[in-house]
Image (cartoon, rainbow, N blue to C red; front, side):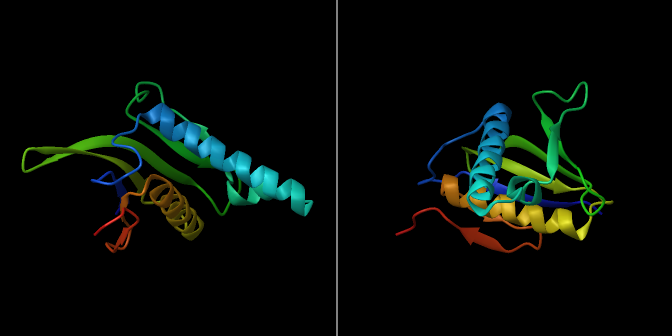
Length: 139
């Protein structure tokens, strides 16, 4: 059964909503940061830290995209954006899905990316195991 994690934008988040293109750009920025770190260390850290290529299926443009693994220990991670309505309040979120055939490596990378993005956007992160991490400022 597929597992999902959610990055929910709440009051106090750095951004109120996000488009799919902005999500892709943020992942590419993350990969660039890894490349700069790798250059300082003298090895291809961006390939180890982000072992995926960003792909889209025909007909799914604007709805979701997936990260396709470059190595056998990584297969797929699916990412998309959406909105939910609670008590007449509209909240935007990013959904990260591990398909049925996802590997343990996919799950660990999915957690890593979710934590990075949640911290960056000061959002509420609902992990694959059901636990919640709050990166948003709460009083």
